[in-house]
Image: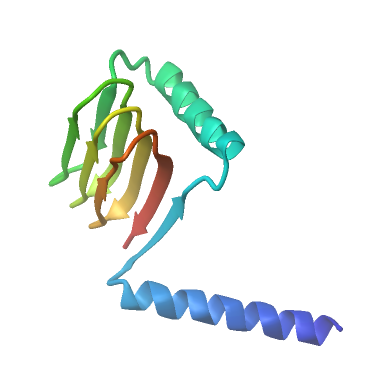
Length: 131
């Protein structure tokens, strides 16, 4: 039983490593809610992040490192967007079109994210790690 579990874990890790190598030295995890409770939990998490970072307003870019680029474009009301970059050479853009909440969190080196939200009240998170 243990050998089967170990084999399954090894195969899963090998698949993840192969996917990361194909992605050009980065791995991304996106969280999209499947129901209203999950969407509210993401919004709560972003609200707690904004309190911890003492954010005033509906858009926030945090950059720690060199050669990073970020932009947030918002139209309509009720949007909240975050692009948080730690490390070097990241690019992150976020476009929101009313009642949207999203956070892009990039760490390490050279990740790239372009997220567009529209059609009302979408929410999500994207975590990227590059090397």
